[in-house]
Length: 157
Image 1 (cartoon, helix red, strand yellow):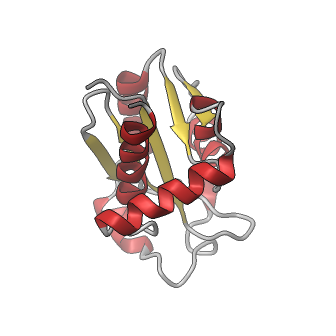
Image 2: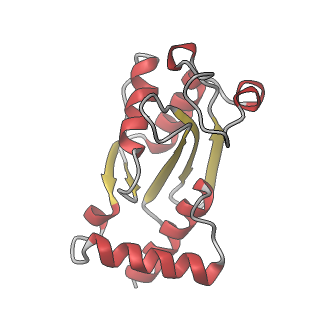
């Protein structure tokens, strides 16, 4: 089965000044990719995080912004990547790409555009049911993307 591509991004804090810390996206065959993002100095990482974010871990284990952008553009080139529409995913992508003077080679749309016959509230209810059924943790970006893949499987049949 070929899947649409889904994407989700974690941010350092929901407050002003938050920046992308991790990103997960799916490939057309349903496989997932996930990376931690090494914060840029311009994002003032030491000042713009919640207590749950370990900046040193991001600095040590994160992938550089240009490398993340290159991989995203390679994997999603010319496609539409779908987000759940609940978070600041589009703004975080814009921040990541603008920081490094890059342009997205793909479009971003909400799942409501993928399923125009179903309203967003119903889609989110279905998503939550799938997460519960498969014991996915919707606080984890990989599980958010997995849930959207399952949602597509059930809605496209």
